[in-house]
Amino acid sequence: MSVKSPIIIWFRQDLRLTDNPALDEAVKSERPIIPVYVLDDENAGAWKMGGASRWWLHHSLNALNHSLSGKMIFLQGDAARVLTQLIKDTKATAVYWNRCYEPWRIDRDKKIKVDLESNGIETKSFNASLLFEPWTIKKSDGTPYRVFTPFFRRGCLSAPEPDAPRPAPQQMYFAQNLKADLALDQLSLLPHAPMPRWDQKMQAYWDIGEAGAHKQLSYFLQNGLKNYKEGRNVPAQDNVSRLSPYLHFGEISPRTVWHTIKQCMIAEGLETDGDHFLSEMGWREFSYSLLYFNRNLPLHPLQERFQLFPWDKDDDALHIWQRGQTGYPIVDAGMRELWETGYMHNRVRMIVGSFLVKDLLLPWQYGEEWFWDCLVDADLANNAASWQWIAGCGADAAPYFRIFNPIGQGEKFDPDGVYIRRWCPELAKLPNEWIHKPWEAPPLLLKECSIVLGQNYPLPMVDHKRARDRALLAFRATKEQ
Image 1 (tube, rainbow, N blue to C red):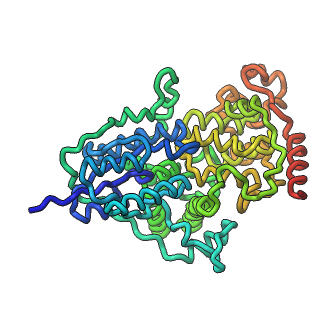
Image 2: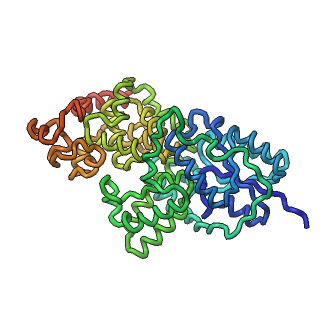
Image 3: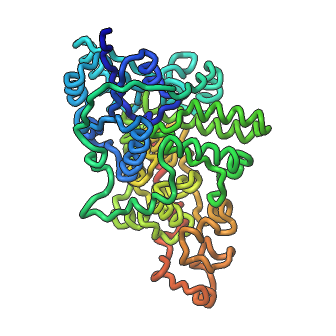
């Protein structure tokens, strides 16, 4: 009996066994498989993963390797070069992968596909990361959508239903005598000397890997989906899914989430909340559509007039914002949650983003870069589209005159100060009346609460009303231009 040639399964942002089309198709071929991950910082360039993402990736790869009986091969460098060498070493005759949609990955993968096929190597790619391929959701005139609601309602919801998720393969046959060039630790994804181990504090907040993703989905169904439409705006409540990092790294597929939510909507009678959650998944699809059709989305405003916007260049102000020392409690709480956990509640992301670009008049790209490094769910499409939305320069953007009042936002969405007290414990003793504006609290009360403004909690770095007026003038002038 002849020995069948192996297939390389190139894992990327699909770090799971369930509903993994590339893996499933390879296993069905009954050929031995070679699971491989390539850390390709060379092609990523400026968009190589930030620190928090690399930390998550390390633990996700560790979990996946365990699921693959320790058979995973870890490689580093230009993917075209290292895959070509792996093919020579293993005599593989095929490479299967699931598609990614970042511009640099699209360019690299197209070249790899052409080069491999010209050398007689079979290549197959599949959709494992999105509900709908970006090029399939267009307006009737064939152009891409620039507004979310018609994109989702007319485009996504009128398209064929996403396929049901595939089960994990029952049995896998691995190629024999494989030798990994690198151990996972040699990818150096975790902080190492002389850097401090800032990542260790995040471990308590996450259960990373495919099993953790399914646990998180189950937790959300039991504790967060009911009242999701309203509760998702309250950062002290459990109504957000916290599935974003799992979806980004592909530890759970969007098809699995989509169909599970739909089943729960029917079984539990949660149509309104479920529909709203599915529309949030639609925002993820919309962001990928924007990136696919606008390759410069992470760097340049979609609305060209914003090229002339008079942004400030204040490094000191940026560092104060990054450290959560702005003097506005809801902003500081969000920035500290980000640093501690690698995550920030979505409502608070909008608040801190508005503060950066409108109160401080700092470029939205500054916020995008900080989130890229600090978020465990850092995603090029979501990050770029969301920051452009906040800045008012993107597709379907918030109008320039929508400037979040950090006091009002805190009072509305954290009325009892639960979120603020958690992340700004120096304010914990303040009554609800003053916790969103401690600088207005009576001096005697501040003393009783052991708060010395300007020492153990900062005074506001800007006056919001004056900052708002300044921003309105700048945005209005840009609009007129």
